[in-house]
Image 1 (cartoon, helix red, strand yellow):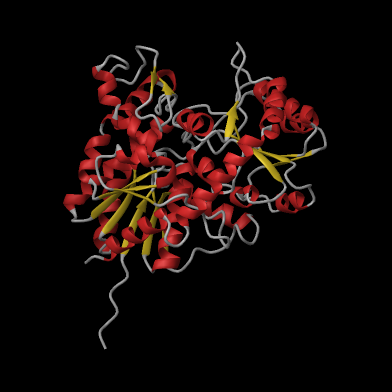
Image 2 (cartoon, helix red, strand yellow):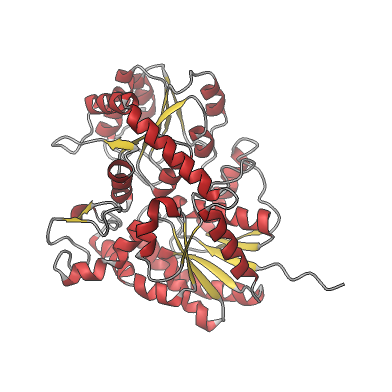
Length: 461
């Protein structure tokens, strides 16, 4: 009897931020549990410790073990223990020197043949020729946002932005009629990095995107053909769309930095169908005291029950001691405030009526898969592009508008939520989006076929 072929070995390399770790962890679960792939998942030491702590502190599903075939590996990130890892530009700058040698050693020692590399970690593609490893470049954002990155050199040439990514001319850019229109003040690299130096470093990575594509064997996207055919067509290499990526029900929070609150699902069980406003701003957005209190007052004005995720580092400037108690007081007794939630299970719950979101791409994909109506509240980066998709292309949500101070008032929160929940057209389109998303990942769907194509590539010897 012939020996069974060896299990393919893949190294997963996400950028060390929640929105990047999550989709690659979900992809790892799919590959290991369903297709027998052996995965070496690389986190930074800092994030690895957070994930282990979250798995120990959450409910029984959050704390479940990873499936056989996933090996958790961690390396230093080059920052001091008390360094500000929310400074994305500063964090990104030190990663190559801290990790490249260790990655090479891991690839050689484990005889790894494929790496799946997150776009912001594209510096690792230099290992492709050095250690004869094949590379799939992973897009943690939409194909449209990636296409906009590819368009950056042309924007420099046309005088729209300078060589550091600073906007020189205000206009709207739309690369295709079926793709989102984005103002130049809200390009996918807008607001990423806390200092001019960090923003310059991040934009230089954007400029190098075409080089990364040239070095990669394949592009893997957390999206699906039915909603992004035009964006996928603008990627100058075969792109496999495998989304929406969603964790198995047994492990819905694998790779999360905070433990999910086990009580929120029981609380949702006690609410009426389609009554709850779910509010979550991802892992990086920061709101100051004025914006937090206006949101709390706005939720109270709706008279609706709400589930609000307030992670430990959501509050920014001007928030003093007792701010969380003050938020709860302002919001009234109709809602539940938690530190983190199992978002996929929340969005799937029949009591949830809508999703107030920062429009991170993972949240948009999860909301689409569950037929959510979106109230869009973007703050930086590709979130503006995603808002345009939701509101202007798919018409599955509406956006908040800030006043002259840049503050979304309580009246705006109330009025937009009432408008969102009263618009049956939005509800119908959200359900069509859900149908298309689920069809794509079902057997024979476009994303399912592309995932199988990728597995076949991994098995090539």
